[in-house]
Length: 410
Ligand SMILES: [Zn+2]
Image (tube, rainbow, N blue to C red; front, side):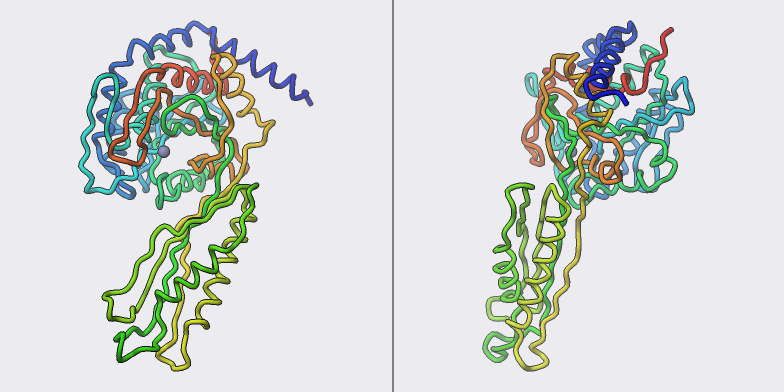
């Protein structure tokens, strides 16, 4: 087996060779020459609403762009994930896949205005992830315009359901299909702006909705009937005393609490939503046990002796993102490191919750990187994107893709 330093050296040589190929240099020039068009594309995609579970219009739009770029087998699956293939000269080689999530966090009734102001672009989702979708189209566009002959086939994916309660459902579904799970060698997730991070460690999270239900009643005449809000308060009190380690970093949050109808009614129900996160699955399991224990303790504490005073609790899992890391000696990590060295780019390994969590949890190769440029105000209607430096992000993605796929030399 080659040593780690030999493997790094050969990755470095592979990247350097790829970067010097004439068609690759032409693709780099294409990115610069088309920067204005890419901005127009980004504003156009931003203006198409894509709320969670409502991505259809954007799926249709992206499929039309994939067709224009003459990708093969352009289609949408039953969830709205969009696919297009750039065939390789070796049709038996596994895919190098590039994905960008097409959903936003913004509900359907959000007023969307995408606009240019000075050198910046503004609009909800303009950076997260209209910039990623734009990068996907830029890579496919440059390869098409220049006629780059990739050896392994390249799979372009616009996926639904990354944000919040979408819970990575788009990528999860793709990795459940044998057609894709058996044939994707590496997945490069393009998410948001920037070039300074490599997300190679998946942050796991589990989310719960806990509902306490009781008989309810009048605050005066039914005094003593068990109160679901009080029970929930006991759960919160007990659960939030659970110690969590600094490393692996583990956190919890009570994000939403609701219940009751009026000040002089004993409520019939109360609900809360809890978010737990950790780099370790064991810690997520431990927090889950602590949450159930807190619920089990609260009920007898609050319930009285009479039958109508009984309380019931329901704990529902509303989100489950697996935690897993890309091994330090993985070929994909070595290659992205070599690309950064070639481009003089500095990036650090980061842990986050992205579409890469799904393949990583299956022991498959995946990373998430940015689309270049810079952005801010993510998940707010004041979101912005500055295209200065987009170039570097696109070169980074293209070089990584082609170093992995190989380029047939004419
Ligand atoms: Zn995102």
